[in-house]
Amino acid sequence: MPTALLSVYDKSGVADLAAGLHELGWRLLSSGGTARTVADRGLPVTDVADLTGVPAILGHRVVTLHPKVHGGILADLDDPDHQRDLDAHGIDPIGLVVVNLYPFAASPGIELIDIGGPAMVRAAAKNHAHVGVVVDPGDYEPVLAELRRAESLSVETRRRLARVAFATTAAYDTEIVAWLDGDGGDGSCTAAGDDPMPETLRLDLVRAQSLRYGENPHQRAARYRVNGVSGWWDTATQHGGKALSYLNLYDAEAAWRLVHRFADPACVIVKHANPCGVAVAAGIVEAYRLANACDPISAFGGVVALNRTVPGELADALAPVFTEVVVAPAYDGAALEALATKANLRVLSAQPPGTLAWDMRPIDGGLLVQQPDPVATDRASWRVVTTTEPTPAQWDDLQFAWTVCAAVSSNAIVVAKDRQAFGIGAGQQNRVDSARIASTRAAGRAGGGVCASDAFFPFRDGLDVAADAGVMAVIQPGGSVRDAEVVEAADERGLAMVFTGERHFLH
Image (tube, rainbow, N blue to C red; front, side, top):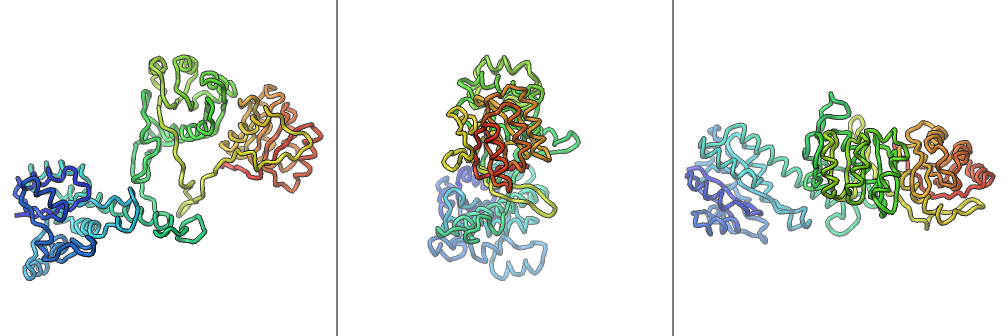
């Protein structure tokens, strides 16, 4: 008679599994609450304490840590020496181990660091040549079905289950290390003292979505999420359109994050990870029209993000423009009906984005890791460095332009007026070229408006280009050895200039 060991924290479905195993002639071995759950079903079950002759001790810290348990799990039944050891010590082999772990991540603490569970899981997974190990209740039915059909689990199934088991214990240990890195388990700072960068980063990623292709059609791609963590992509609903590609997600992520930096109705249009249209308005329809007017050529084939429910009127305005993705909190019926007619348009509804833990980029042999860039728009730390002060309307535009500029690849220049971007210069090797691009795209529409620069002007030439475009106020971090020269140029041109003291490079 084969033996199954059942010891689970999450008891959902375990009684049904036990009943199925009993019907197939399996002996049931269990512990504590799991044994009671199985017995309450009217099934014969042997408590581990009765098997070992030792009750649970140390406040339930030691229950299954015993040779009669681990010997039964780890025995190589093809090894005569192992078989002699089993016979000598009266140990019965265990052919199936069903364990799930204490939910450490739900409420981190010392007493939720499972010891016996991971030990049994790892032992069974190591000996998967002879033992099936089940850590996911979702596998109960498939395992029972295979046992009913074939009377035993196949080599392939046992190997698959072992992989899931080791992945589970690896993720579990990662959660504990992250907790210890966070406060040392005792309320202290980090494991490395005051250094915000931990000694180690252990990434446990699960494939969450297969993508149509990567940056190019010949590249395969997928979206992975941190195990146990849910982001807005995991709850987003795609209402229509083709399958998403790598760049669809990359651009939509950039657009969705930027549009949520604005409290009022706003629209962001992103192309190649850079905004090419941003506007804030009294209503969401007007915000889209103003954003699209910034650079309608670049908006072709872009991603549109909106921070309000999309009405039918906005869908009608969007319909003539070729768009890859539109993402919003929701859509009314008329909007969905109109957008559904565009077969190539991916229509997403989503929750607001969460906070990123780290900003990572691959390099040879590892990763570059930094804290995410928080974009400060609080004027308290900003200072006016020119004779001329910004007007109240210019202050609003400076905050708007600074927020947009921080989401644009360096060197970044944004020209705006009335909380509408008119020219965005991105990704140039020098700042003056970005200023020329932004000014050219503004095409005279930003007279009296503002200019934002993500880093200091190293010379006055970039400032002069912006002034020639008609802007009357400038926001930049400051910090150049030629700051005095640039401020003097701003005074000469009659501009107001604000220093933020913080740059926002985005490569």
